[in-house]
Every structure is written in structure tokens, then in C-alpha cells.
Figure 1 (spheres, rainbow, N blue to C red):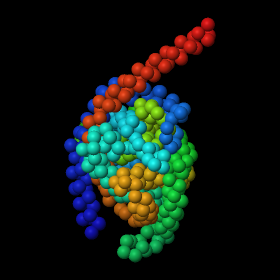
Figure 2: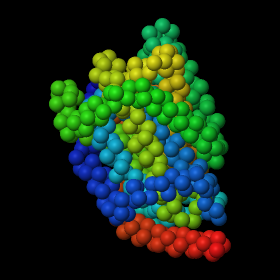
Figure 3: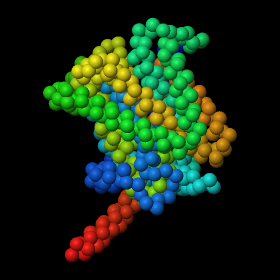
Length: 483
């Protein structure tokens, strides 16, 4: 039965993530890159500066940095550790190249999403700042397009409940815990009607569900508070860990880069035809890149809309740094580790096992220590992603139900239930389901970004014209004081 279901899911996935959607996302990124004048290169230093510098007198529920951490909590997750591994194993090393290209263009996309989220957000009767694609579709494109906003919100709920938010994250956590504590399945229990699993998987699913429930009760304030602590701390640990691997294998890095670039355009030359064609490499790279950084998906602007800011462009720049950190920094390091060590070519391992193999064989540390650190990183990354996506999907549901609190609370408990049953889903099915809903969610959001690209360009031009004058006035004032 599972084989039939998996085959059906793969067929749907290939249809959703076909050439049209990849062209839509890539062309959208190119268009927005041109309209904002390669802003992801020119203004990246300023964006990184503003990432830590909260805006004074801004309107919103949480600081810009907290909004970014909430967005990063939903993006820095299993996609960075497991998603990269599945992409490289399925599409070859070239998938990493297309992941980076998609992320570079996605920075302009993420900037535009953050800008539009703040520009078109609303404040409800409880003084909550609400925004995201459903509002910039409805308020930016007009009431006649509210049907498109509802489609986005519906798929947003599905992505949270069946895709990025629950199954894939929990599955990654349980796999990592199982591989570390009970790789030989020595301690097992039989779950009725489902199968036999390690006792550590069952225990971890229970603990995780309880921890998720305790945080979600506190809403955006508690989610952002937890994210501000966990996300930066674990990101730094993982980056240091990855940099050490690259340094210890520095002589292999040039060869790995050549392999990645060559495989991007001619996978068969590198893999011997073992992992498919050029189109497969691009498909896996782009889809896993979107899964990881969510540029074009429309999720991050939901968090951006809650930021304490009065400048849409400023929050757009802060949002843009999320894609840079998530994919161009963290995913690239993971991908390099996998290619350098040849982990993607090892038979009989999948998902987190591939990344674990890479770090164990690329670092001169004890294998147990390496596996433990990687497991901890994955657990906390995935945990914060679960929290972030509950917030996203609940905002989508609020839009669909016009703020029906009973429906939202029911959904929250269903979400916690999905967290509990996630470990019992097969790895391939989990990632395929996530890919399908990602693609369906991206379509209405990309349509909106195409329609509103003129607004993005105008807001960007006007802001930097004002910003330049302000900087000149400050410089003139300082020079007079000096004189």
C-alpha cells in the first residue's frame, strides 16, 4: 500500500514542480532583481546592519530582529540538514548549484515579500498587526482578487499541517534521535496498525508534542521569544561546525566546487547517469531551496508584518537576510560537506544519515560526539520550524475564517497531533508531500509578486531617495560640529 501511495505522490510532485512552476519562480526572481537594481548585492551590508538594529518608533507587535528570528525559525530547519542531503542524493551535486542560484534570486523575492507585507498590513481590534500574501493580494491587487488570496491561505494551512510545519520536521528529529541512540533497532515497540519503531522514536514524539503545545499556547510573543534564543545560538554552532569541516578538508574544496558546477549542467558526466538529468538536478535544487529559505512561498511576510517598523523597505531588507543566512551560508556549507566527503554516493543511507556520514568522515572528532552535535542542531532547528509554521498557518486560517477563534484553536490541537504522528511517516512520502504543498502555495504568491512588482520598485526608489537625503543631512551636521 505504501509503495502505491508513494508512487502517486511522486507523480503529483513531478507535475506540480514541473517546468512551468520553476520558470515562474526563477523568472519572478529575475524580474524583481532587475526592478530593484540588484539590491541583494548593493544593499546586503546595510541589510545585515539593520538586522540587529531595531527601528525606533516603529509600529508592530515584535521587533524587526524578533520578526526575522521568527521567520528564520521556520526556514532554518531540516531543509538545511536533511533537505540538502535529499536534493544532492536525488539530483546529484549540481542540485546545490541550482539551490544557490534560486537563493540569490530569492533574496530579491524575499525582499519584495517583506516590503509588501508591511505596506499592506492591517491592525485588528486587538491591536495585532496582520499581514502577508493574502492581504497584499486583496489590498494591493484589489477585492476582485480575494479568491486568489483565499487559495493561498488554504494551501498555507495545508503546508503547515502536512508539509514543512509538522511531518518533515518531526520525521527529521525522530530519525536523528533514532540513528544516535538506537541505530540497530535494539529497543523496539509495535505501534498498532502502523509498524514497529524504536522506543526512542516513540518517546521523542511524545516529548516533542508536549514541548510544542507549551510554546504554542503563548502565541507570537512566546514563539518569537523562544526563536530569538534558539535560532542564533544553534545557527552559530552549526556554522562553526561546518567551517571546521571545510578547513580540515580545504584541499578538497576546489575539486568539490568544480564537481558541483559541472554536475549542474551535465549531471551524467559526474554521476554516470545514476541520479537523473539536468532537469532533475534543477528541479531538486530549486524545490529544496524553496523548502529551505521559503523565498517565493509567501510565508516569511506573515512574520514580517508583525515587525515594529514604519518603513516597508527597511523590513524588506531585514527579511532578505533570512534567505542569505539560510541557503547561501548554511545550506552551501552542508552541501559542500556532503560533496567533499562523497556522502551522497554511499548506498543504503538517506536523509539525515547522509549529513551525519559527511560530518563523521570529514571531521577528526569522535564519531559519537559529531553525531550528537549534529543531532542537537537538527532537533532545535526543526523544533523552531514547527513553532514558526504554526504561527504562519494559524494566520492563514484566521484570514479564511475571519478570525474564528474556535476554529483556530481546533486547528492548533490538530497541529500538535500531526507533530505526534510525524515520526511514523516514511521519509520519501514526507518530503514529497512537503514539496507538493510548497509548490501549490507558491503559485498564488508569485502571481501577486508579478502583479505588484511596480509597487516594489516605486517604494524602493522613493525610500532610498529619502534615505540618501537624510544621510547627507547627518553628514553635513556632523561636519559643522567638527568645524
